[in-house]
Amino acid sequence: MLERFAQFVEKWWRTNYSDSNKTHAFLSSTLVKRYLNRYIFFKCRRSIAYCYNTSPFYHDLLKSANIKPADIKSPGDMRKIPLTDSCDLVHPERFFSVPISRFIRVHSTAGSTGIPKRIFFTPKDIEQQITRNATGFRLFYGMNENDRVRIMYEIGYGMNDWGIRYCMENAVQRLGALAVTTGGVLSAEDEFQMLSNYKVTNIFGTPSRLLSLTCQLEKNHDLKSLHIRNILLGAEPLPSLTRTRLKNIWGANIFQGYGLTELGGSIAGECCEKDGMHVTESDVFVEVIDPKTSEILEDEAIGELVFTTLDREGMPLVRYRTHDLGMILHDDCPCGLPFRRIQVKGRNDKIFTIGSGDKLSPATLDNIILNLPNVMDYQLILDRECEKDSLTILVETTSQDTSIQQEIIDTLMSIPEIHHGVNCSRTIEYPRVQLLKPHTLVSDAVKARRIVDKRHLYE
Image (cartoon, rainbow, N blue to C red):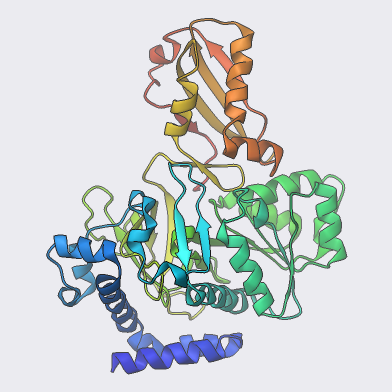
């Protein structure tokens, strides 16, 4: 019964996604709501079996844990399967479920936590990503062939193989809408002229980029005159104060999205209610676990978000740890859509986001700064100034020579994520360095806390 239902839903989805009213009515129907959870878990079990039979990594992982796909009979049984972490992806070929000749694209993460993670996609995988995004744009934001969409994600990580722009651009085009992109970063005035000349109706980008652009333009322009209808933001947290500020200045609806390159880009987004982000449960199975014990938590409990891909053909992932803290909302959404909603609350590791969505680890700073001559210890203070990230680094040195100060600044600017934020996306202020005498940080009892983040990104 469930298999027939799954085939029916998937066939219907592929042929009717372009009609948002019909899609919303179908997903909100009693038929779908009655079987949705069972249907999603049916697909989850099917994906686990597929991984066991085709992926060397998961075959060995499940076999070593003495688990067979048939042992996973309920969502609670998922705890039997060991978690997959980002470090496992260093050798992506171990995850391949098809021959390498079947892949047509590779999307990479920034690599701030080590070697960049490379995720491989088949034509089917890419088609599903594009269809998923196109469906969401039409269903949540009412986009159609009359829209003109400015996609600013080309300045995200400053990487050509960061897949979010590719998928969004193709999804916009799938709708018959105009995708407005550039090959590099525009000045604020050139950006304004582009938005005006193309009569852009929707903007996709990161909160920090939009804030920086807003700060530069609002002095000389009435941004409401552009009549932007929707601004969809992702790749980094969207604080409530930032949302309110952007809404008041642009006069647009501000929406938040969530996704990971490893999971194929966007996998959750806000509806008109803006109370949590609906997960595309036809594509991923979501769990929340205790990051210390790995136990599965109930709805409304804050823990680490974990996802399993349900239809990935080339490089599927099972119980992949995001290291994002969040929770699953328990109540039904007033919009009528049955897909569960999540809220992201922070990180459970030491990775922090700076600039226009770049992620940086303290280990990166340690390896560069602590190896400089005369440097004993440091503390980085992150804050917001004029809608940009500010970096102030307090450094204990054996000498107070000003040349050391410049050397530290040059070292910080050599970090790609900082250099890109200062010179390209213009979402980071030029770093400031304050030299301290030895043991100053120790006496202030902050030696162990090298990163102090005052930006309140998750509020």
